[in-house]
Image 1 (cartoon, rainbow, N blue to C red):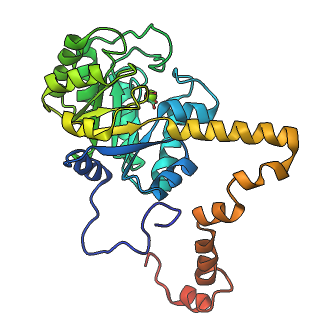
Image 2 (image 1 turned 45 degrees about the vertical axis):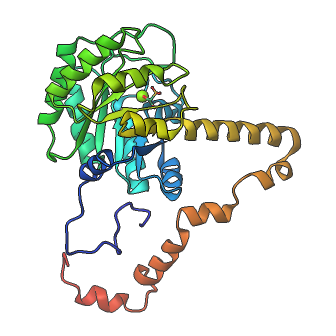
Amino acid sequence: MSVYGAQRRDRPTAEPAPSPGARLRALLGGSEPAVLMGAHDGLSARVAAEAGFPALWASGLCISTALGVRDSDEASWTELLEMAARVVAASGLPVLVDGDTGHGNFNTARRFTARVEQIGGAGVCLEDKLFPKMNSFVGDGHELTKIGEFCGKIAACRDALADPDFVIVARTEALIAGAGLDEALRRGEAYRRAGADALFIHSRQSTVSEIAQFAREWQSRLPLVIAPTTYHTTPMEEYVKLGISGVIWANQSMRASLAAMRKACESLRRDGPAAVEDGISSLEELFSLMRYQELAEDEKRYGDQAPGIAELVATRKPGS
Ligand code: SPV
Ligand code: MG
């Protein structure tokens, strides 16, 4: 894949490529849980793709962090979308974009969702909290939106899409808000009926138990997606047993880079560059990840010193 995201030269032309939505849908319909790696910019997206993840989560928390703001609608939705577009383009993978609450009402939600489709996203995830939202791990004041209002958002988003395979994930924060299992189930069912393709059930407990309870009651009415940030010790086999369809490693990449940047900055300030050199990526690694070699090859093909370029320019028909 080129740095431009599209498989410019290596894509066979005979069959149209499946849409990003179709690719994500297929992953969520697989026999094993699909793992969606969290990404927050072009670099983290490329690193995740290189590591072999099949799909990405464009995390609102991590994009906000990368922008230097809090995950409480401090970034505008166009700022978040711009970063999500970088995640899509840099990875070439199906990307589920965190749409938070839809950034307002049904109208902002559908505008955002339509734009996610236009930038090549595979799906959007909307959560049933009030705007402005606060990250689910911060504080206790997580107020839920009315069920009817959230169903209207889902329906409006569905109607704003061109690709029927684009994935709408409804996320209930009922367990985060302390509203209980029955409320979470009631909301999940309403969102299913409103047209959601998958349900994200979120928990911040340190064990998987409330997710397990939910999954047993839910009985695969829609694919279930989870983000095991606090219950991270649960083995993947448990999710297989529970019939979970998607597992999101939402913020580990950002937290890894935060820890590494802090360590490097502290050591550089204290001991100078020689102290960190062995523990950081070489420039060669960076150039290889970003395919600088490809640019050199393109220079030979398209640059003004390229052997046949004068003839090509003289003979090529416009648009060919
Ligand atoms: C995010 O990554 O922005 C999420 C997941 O929404 S969490 O932070 O776990 O709520
Ligand atoms: Mg989020």
